[in-house]
Image 1 (cartoon, one colour):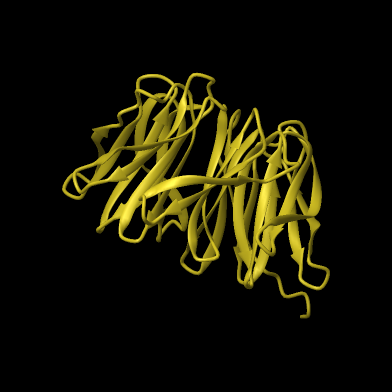
Image 2: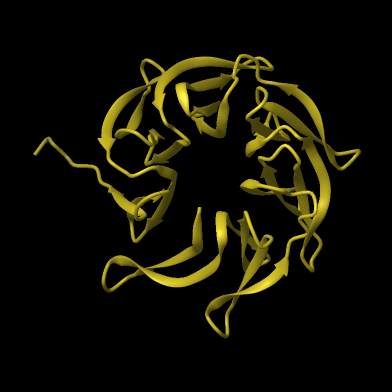
Length: 296
């Protein structure tokens, strides 16, 4: 939780990232950028003072407040997910309080407006949008039940509860990723084992367990056909895993020390690849991904 969303810009001369803009707020839990018709918006969810959308102003070269989000059903936002279905833009705020409703918002050319309430009073911690067999789906992780799956109904133009992912209690974050044609889920648990699941015949099956100690993020990312998982830890070193194509599992690759990591985000620029790690207690750290030829 922080007081601002930092916008960084790559400096081609200094060859580093510099602060470009700073969106300030109260107890910000998430910032999500989205580009709609060549315009850049940042959705900012806050614990206090409401949640807002900022829009990039070309003339002023900064982000200005564009809209207050209608949050009458939102008590304690925990995650934002933005996505497109057909030509329509949406975002979801996952609500982690007993009194709140995770809410879907839809873009109508003037702003985002409350469109559908999902999942009542389950203390949702995370929402993930993914394409499953050609259909749009949402997976919601909750503190009080196993993750549930919603499928988009073209006829109703709503998300319909479709099922759940069994035996996955206490999952706080869900991320999906693809390796070749296969679809996988990374399921984060704070304590115990975080899990990697693979989509098979109409269901997800566990393929690997990764020991977690104070983990709030298991983030998949890839560079140049190398597939990684970053497993954050609040108590010890965070672990980076690398996909073993022959054995179809992740192997431990590297340890990194980050104070209470909350996210890992890939940024590529100037033929260079970086990963940003935000921290709950310290500074955001930026790592560079480099491949060293050891054959010389």
